[in-house]
Length: 290
Ligand code: CAA
Image (cartoon, rainbow, N blue to C red):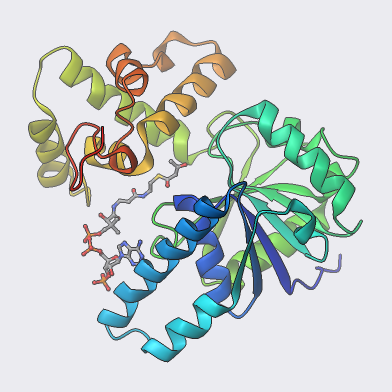
């Protein structure tokens, strides 16, 4: 089995995950095109890359010139057709199956036949996303962790029809950008979110039932279990809408009531309290908008 050579990468979605993914590929010398539907979102993705690289410069991990070159190597676009020269496309758009399938159908039409199409979905079935294309053997899950520039793991998810060659190419690609690849089967929530999200959901239940306030819940997990951040602060960082979407995928996928999303989580999302990105979740953040 011959792994394909990857040089040009396209990242779809310039949110927190997409911009982090684009940054890591650019840091490792790949040509990167970062796509979003609006110019404003694409530019905000580039700003996130600059802010993240500034942290590395402040820590002395790279100099300002290296950081500038990395930023310059990321081309932003609002035209999906700009991905047509890419060897590898990774999608990091919102977690809606219908939207993902629509964009994969379009990618299948636009991209060269040998290009690999990956999804950064955090829990949706890769096999179903792949079914929107005529190249299911070239479709795979490549699930990065947040914050992407810092977290070493990439969960590689093989859809039912993913080929060995695609799997081996993408595993090699993860290693080439300094990540550790762990392969798992296509099952709701994969491994990461099947374990992490019920813990977060249970933390929300403890607040919902008045067992403790968010600060106390997070302190228990930080000081008692040595977690780097408490589950509610982590939920705010991931985005409460994303947490809810993942719980719904687990609930629907397994049909097991143990995965039912906490009503408080649903209510916060309904209120627009989505965590850090909206200025309010279980905590309030600077420049609060929500
Ligand atoms: N870009 C670049 N560097 C960053 C960064 C970013 N966005 N965020 C943090 N860092 C770096 C800092 O520069 C710092 O580097 P040094 O260790 O060299 O000093 C380091 O990360 C630690 O940062 P801070 O001191 O600012 O903050 P911290 O010590 O609290 O660490 C953290 C921040 C890395 C986020 C840590 O709290 C942590 O590991 N939290 C848990 C994260 C986690 O569980 N992620 C997985 C979420 S689940 C997911 O992503 C999957 C899904 O589908 C939902």
